[in-house]
Image (cartoon, rainbow, N blue to C red; front, side, top):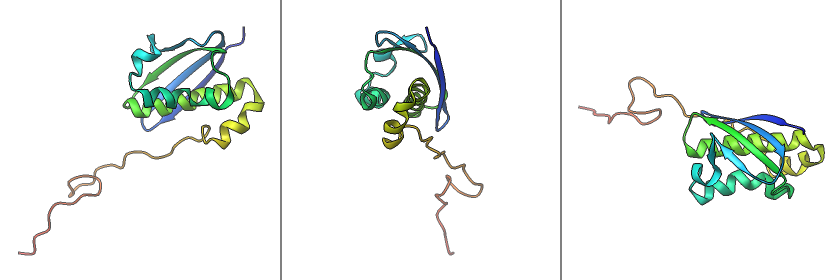
Length: 128
Protein backbone atom coordinates (compact mmCIF):
# COMPACT_ATOMS: atom_id res chain seq x y z
CA UNK A 1 0.00 0.00 0.00
CA UNK A 2 1.58 3.23 -1.21
CA UNK A 3 0.81 6.41 0.77
CA UNK A 4 1.46 9.74 -0.94
CA UNK A 5 1.63 12.97 1.07
CA UNK A 6 1.51 16.53 -0.22
CA UNK A 7 1.00 20.06 1.10
CA UNK A 8 -1.00 22.90 -0.43
CA UNK A 9 -1.38 26.56 0.56
CA UNK A 10 -3.75 29.37 -0.40
CA UNK A 11 -4.04 32.77 1.33
CA UNK A 12 -3.42 31.79 4.98
CA UNK A 13 -4.84 28.24 4.73
CA UNK A 14 -2.58 25.16 4.79
CA UNK A 15 -3.70 21.68 3.71
CA UNK A 16 -1.89 18.38 4.22
CA UNK A 17 -3.12 15.47 2.09
CA UNK A 18 -2.57 11.72 2.44
CA UNK A 19 -3.57 9.81 -0.69
CA UNK A 20 -4.11 6.05 -0.46
CA UNK A 21 -5.39 3.77 -3.26
CA UNK A 22 -9.00 2.94 -2.36
CA UNK A 23 -12.65 3.61 -3.11
CA UNK A 24 -12.96 7.42 -3.20
CA UNK A 25 -13.63 8.21 0.47
CA UNK A 26 -12.70 11.79 1.44
CA UNK A 27 -12.17 12.82 5.06
CA UNK A 28 -11.31 16.41 6.01
CA UNK A 29 -10.30 17.09 9.65
CA UNK A 30 -11.95 13.75 10.56
CA UNK A 31 -15.28 14.94 9.09
CA UNK A 32 -17.13 13.80 5.98
CA UNK A 33 -16.36 15.75 2.79
CA UNK A 34 -19.99 16.94 2.33
CA UNK A 35 -20.19 17.97 5.98
CA UNK A 36 -16.98 20.03 5.88
CA UNK A 37 -17.72 21.74 2.53
CA UNK A 38 -21.53 22.13 2.37
CA UNK A 39 -21.35 24.64 -0.54
CA UNK A 40 -21.49 22.98 -3.97
CA UNK A 41 -18.96 25.33 -5.65
CA UNK A 42 -16.35 24.53 -2.96
CA UNK A 43 -16.87 20.78 -3.47
CA UNK A 44 -16.50 21.16 -7.26
CA UNK A 45 -13.21 23.06 -6.81
CA UNK A 46 -11.86 20.33 -4.49
CA UNK A 47 -12.84 17.51 -6.90
CA UNK A 48 -11.49 19.29 -10.01
CA UNK A 49 -8.08 17.50 -9.99
CA UNK A 50 -9.86 14.11 -10.08
CA UNK A 51 -12.20 15.14 -12.90
CA UNK A 52 -9.35 16.44 -15.07
CA UNK A 53 -7.20 13.33 -14.56
CA UNK A 54 -10.19 10.91 -14.63
CA UNK A 55 -9.13 9.40 -11.29
CA UNK A 56 -12.53 9.55 -9.49
CA UNK A 57 -13.12 6.86 -6.84
CA UNK A 58 -9.59 5.44 -7.13
CA UNK A 59 -8.13 6.98 -3.97
CA UNK A 60 -9.06 7.47 -0.33
CA UNK A 61 -8.00 10.87 0.99
CA UNK A 62 -7.32 12.03 4.50
CA UNK A 63 -6.85 15.80 4.72
CA UNK A 64 -5.87 18.13 7.55
CA UNK A 65 -6.72 21.78 6.90
CA UNK A 66 -6.08 24.77 9.14
CA UNK A 67 -6.12 28.55 8.85
CA UNK A 68 -8.01 30.91 6.59
CA UNK A 69 -11.65 30.69 5.55
CA UNK A 70 -13.55 28.15 3.50
CA UNK A 71 -12.52 29.67 0.15
CA UNK A 72 -8.81 29.67 1.01
CA UNK A 73 -9.08 26.16 2.43
CA UNK A 74 -10.75 24.98 -0.78
CA UNK A 75 -7.82 26.27 -2.86
CA UNK A 76 -5.29 24.75 -0.46
CA UNK A 77 -7.01 21.35 -0.57
CA UNK A 78 -7.19 21.39 -4.39
CA UNK A 79 -3.45 22.21 -4.63
CA UNK A 80 -2.46 19.47 -2.17
CA UNK A 81 -4.58 16.88 -4.02
CA UNK A 82 -3.09 17.95 -7.36
CA UNK A 83 0.44 17.69 -6.00
CA UNK A 84 -0.27 14.26 -4.53
CA UNK A 85 -1.71 12.99 -7.83
CA UNK A 86 1.29 14.35 -9.75
CA UNK A 87 3.60 12.59 -7.27
CA UNK A 88 1.67 9.33 -7.66
CA UNK A 89 1.83 9.28 -11.48
CA UNK A 90 4.16 11.50 -13.57
CA UNK A 91 1.85 11.30 -16.61
CA UNK A 92 -0.81 13.28 -14.68
CA UNK A 93 1.55 16.24 -14.20
CA UNK A 94 0.92 17.66 -17.70
CA UNK A 95 -2.91 17.80 -17.59
CA UNK A 96 -2.87 19.20 -14.05
CA UNK A 97 -0.34 21.89 -15.00
CA UNK A 98 -2.32 22.81 -18.16
CA UNK A 99 -5.45 23.24 -16.02
CA UNK A 100 -3.48 25.53 -13.66
CA UNK A 101 -3.94 23.26 -10.65
CA UNK A 102 -0.24 22.92 -9.76
CA UNK A 103 0.36 26.67 -9.49
CA UNK A 104 0.41 28.16 -6.01
CA UNK A 105 -1.75 31.32 -5.98
CA UNK A 106 0.61 33.98 -4.55
CA UNK A 107 -2.10 36.56 -3.75
CA UNK A 108 -2.24 37.51 -0.08
CA UNK A 109 -4.17 40.14 1.87
CA UNK A 110 -2.39 43.49 1.83
CA UNK A 111 -1.65 44.90 5.28
CA UNK A 112 -3.42 47.94 6.69
CA UNK A 113 -1.26 51.07 6.66
CA UNK A 114 -1.17 53.69 9.43
CA UNK A 115 -2.96 56.95 8.68
CA UNK A 116 -5.43 55.10 6.47
CA UNK A 117 -8.78 53.45 7.03
CA UNK A 118 -7.79 50.14 5.38
CA UNK A 119 -4.94 48.88 3.17
CA UNK A 120 -5.71 51.34 0.37
CA UNK A 121 -8.80 53.29 1.46
CA UNK A 122 -7.94 56.63 3.01
CA UNK A 123 -9.75 58.92 5.42
CA UNK A 124 -11.79 61.69 3.79
CA UNK A 125 -9.63 64.65 2.80
CA UNK A 126 -10.71 68.09 3.98
CA UNK A 127 -9.14 71.20 2.48
CA UNK A 128 -10.45 73.49 5.21
